[in-house]
Image (cartoon, rainbow, N blue to C red; front, side, top):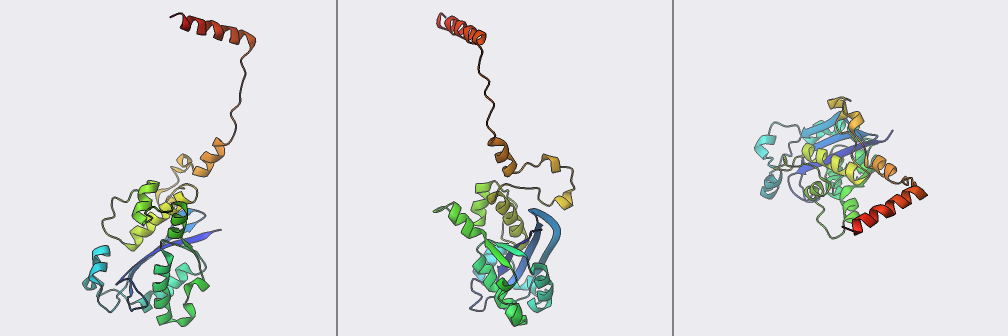
Length: 227
């Protein structure tokens, strides 16, 4: 069983090292390339101001976060959710830096998180596959045909959902997303890119024409030439 967690965060600013804090974390569980119902989502009170530029990106204000739990209150549940999984993150160094700082504040033994989780950085993958092109999450959604019209602002759970779809298409075709929620009625309609490729590589059977058919064909061409 391959357990992967697609994870995204929102923060008060751009630098965990300079004191910025995590204010939202969204995680989706994927087992054997299928999104499950299991997810983790939490807003976090950072106990500090949020940069104006950051608010323009995610729309989360200090006022909204006033009654939300601080990170120490959610750390145990978040760690349990991601422990031992393979984390899929777009621009992983950014999110990992915030997770490491937040976990270290609560329990030094839980940082760095890469002691407990492998990490796949989809930005690195995209830059390798599409050098010299824009590789933001929005750009990848457009490139891979993932609908992101509902995304006016960044949000951790929304972005994790979009990233899950992009990742599946980047790594061999989309399988059924959120199948556990929507039931199995469409399962037979899902054809992965791998299956399409597998079918396409089988050579077509060539059946040569016999002598009678060749004569008939020549007569047909003569009729066409006489018109």
